[in-house]
Image (cartoon, helix red, strand yellow):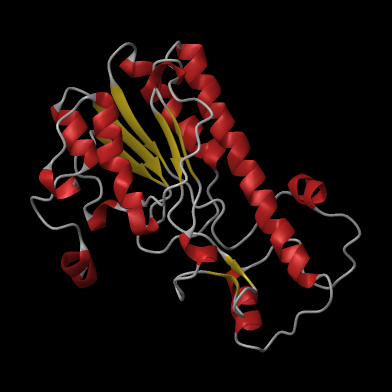
Length: 247
């Protein structure tokens, strides 16, 4: 509780959800909890804020994008034609890597090593501390498990887009897909890890935007951008004044 009090979002700091709610948008988030739990103040501006049950301060990684989209379905049905801001989040691609056997089989074939099909954080820590030596094929197996999680999250995201289409809201929607960090797979010694370096494998993230009406479809931006640019860019596209703290 004391850590949350010291580290939570400072009182009075505006959030994207708060700005959009003040502009008349319905606002909701369905997320994996952990570092996004409401104790950190990140629910500010959301009318509905649901975190995965049981997740308070530690991300577990056992939720899925499909589950979060399913949780958002009834709320989306309730907003009807009203402008809305929906923030869907999952730890699915976060370690541990726990793909279904079917997803893993798509990503690899012929692995004959001793590592399990699901890669736990405990196992990753043993590898990174040197207590567990990687054998030929092991690293590729771990990456295949990670890729299986990504494929599953992709499928969940596709379900969200299909839901927007069924509502008749996809064409007019502003859709943003992004992550908070990448993952290291041996580039500098660590495997299945993040938060310990500032190299590209951890800093570079997916960032894809679908603008209303399909404007600028297929455009790639060569200039370097940052996660800090996302909120003001969204508000600019929506024609909503940008708080100075966002600039």
